Length: 179
Image (cartoon, rainbow, N blue to C red; front, side, top):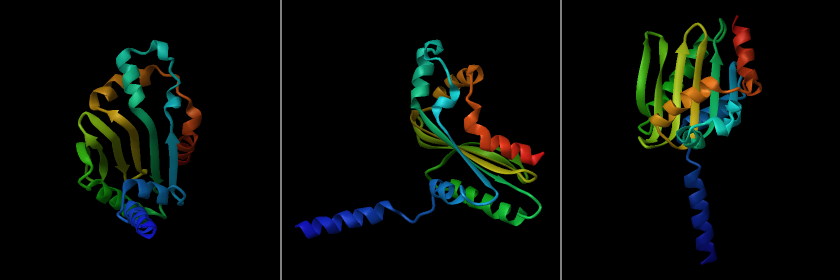
């Protein structure tokens, strides 16, 4: 019996460690690579006073867990890699678990907004944007119980927040290098 239980646990472990490509795996594999910048942002970046929030805004903020940002900076020496990496992200976003809300842009520049989950219980929003002169960025907004209305509730909070820009230093450095 003990042996059977051990085998079952081992099988479950291997099943959980799927080798199927995912956006999360792509982030982990890419964050240390040259030409990529990775930033994880916590809700504390907003630096808002809870007493100034409406009940709806408090509820929306409670669904937000973190944001992962991965950006690829294109230059004269990595344009081929840029195309390959951009195509990898696009292929990952074609997975049926990602439901596209919106597609924007045309030609080689543009992007999309997708989500994972049900309309009233979104686990992840994914924003992908690319511009051939600059590179691309993938933003994963992770949460529990998010919905489009909650995101709209958060817009005034973002506008009036006292953002902690320290968490965004790596992105600021990327932008400075682009000039």
